[in-house]
Image (cartoon, rainbow, N blue to C red):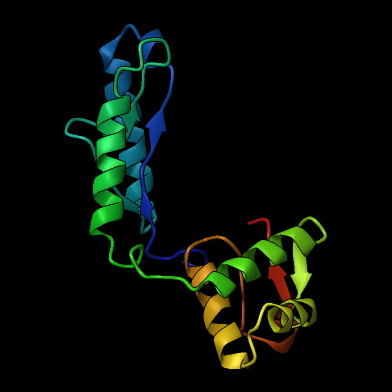
Length: 153
């Protein structure tokens, strides 16, 4: 629930061409169902299984997966929101200037000023969006956590 709490989850099983016994597909689906029961995921299901079996050799199943991905994106209102160019530049700069796993809030503020973000409110709004999309992790429950932004979730 910390990282992209409302994100949809689409599970893909590859190498379905190597599964001869269809009972194995049902068994994997049962295991996935048990996992979903234990965690509050927004799992997108196929007709028969809790995951999308893909045949790596023939590409069987890819078109169905592509169709579901398109449907999820078009029906998810949070995906359609416009993002300003300076927010995109901010994100690019954050990801280019991190030390591999994190960047300090001080450094992000410097980058924000350089790309034209003059208010701290706009910067906080951009960081909240990047966090909600799962691009970064931004924890704000303490001053120590607020000062570090995880760039490699």
